[in-house]
Length: 413
Image (cartoon, rainbow, N blue to C red; front, side, top):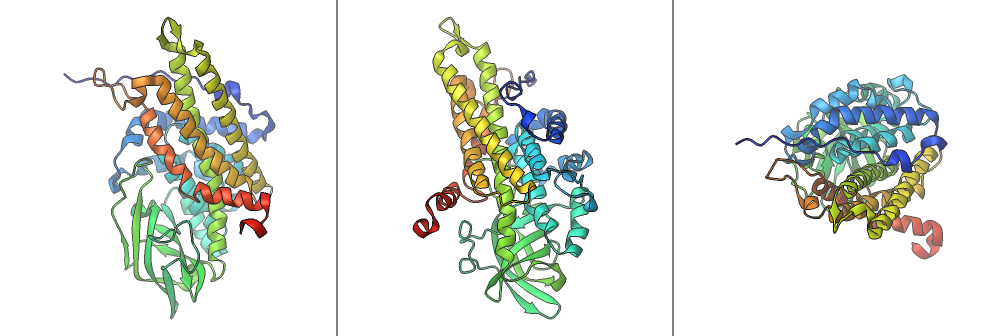
């Protein structure tokens, strides 16, 4: 007998009652509706498939990337001269889109928007004009997949020139790039890659055509969660890169990478809020329906207080990523708020999802119920949320950066 999967009714969005966009620019409320409509229409019906897929090159959702481009979502972060929307608050709009995408699929949000639109896209936006004007329109139209490569097997949190082993030597007409990168999102399907490397003892950033001779990409890593965010090792074996493909000259490469990573941390905060909000809404729905000892779970004061506290935490994390994004849009440095947004936004889904699983009991521990084929999303959210505390700058490093502001570098180093 074939069991037909049970389709759950739409969840009540508790954020509509607990959170108010009225202090934000009017364009943001409109963009939230636009992004939510896309997520409800495109991602929600495929959320189980997307969030439980095993890592493979064939699992990369080219069709969703195309739909995101057709819907104009890649236009949101960029100015009009490269095909973007030219919004007044592009970073805040981008982070808002990330929250809405992550509500259903953090892997899509991380790989196709944080990785593609922020890390790669914002690096290209700051690149020399001929690189910026050629590649950003292609990215916006969804015609290329980009990848952002900083980490190495022995250099991730520490990206100093002394720790890095990927180097480029000068040759006639350009450079020869050699080395190995690790944990590189989208690398197994990428057309271009922004690569942090060492030239003459100083860090630079090069734009690499991933179809060049000497580029070798390994199989996707098999991870605990965020499986749709495909990561692979990349080996450069004396790869030629033309001199006009330099994004940042020696001595400026690390600052170029860190500038994009600071924006990525805001994005990670927004992704975490999206995951936390989904877990929260699932718990509220369950507590209103499920009874124990003659009472609805929502009538037990323990759960009332626990989820009131979680509502405060979600709102705080959301406000932090929004403030950091607004600082970027005001052309101010987003620190320490970006670090705060990353820490709070990565902690909150872990805390909320833990309690959401607990309040669901055995149903919270399920992937699929054998009796009727119904799917339960909390186990994938639980797997997906842990990486937020690790990637794009481990939380311990973010806490250190906040402490340096509070206590002074003379004591913290």
